[in-house]
Length: 124
Image 1: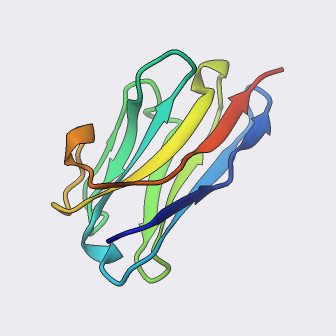
Image 2: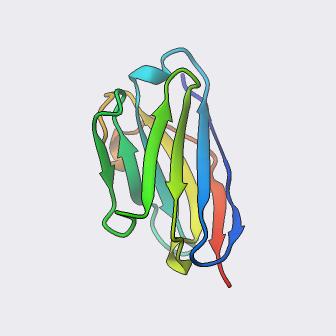
């Protein structure tokens, strides 16, 4: 069992940066692939970024490529999402997720555990 708690969301202006954190419980965090998803009002939850257990493999949605960076610190049981050059269309609730395969994956169905989410609002 893995429990995930996101933090770091907030209200920012276009062009600003934010770093989201996701703290995981449990001693097996280092074996999980981790992902970030987001959900805007009235829209489906969509993939943002993923990282494998070893950090060797990362994937990004085209909409965030070059602006967002996913990373993890297995010693701290934490995964991060550094978000730069934020745009209004980045607004939404951001969720982190843990997948038992250990691989980085864009598929929601391959994640076993989810956090409660943190709100990110980008507005002038």
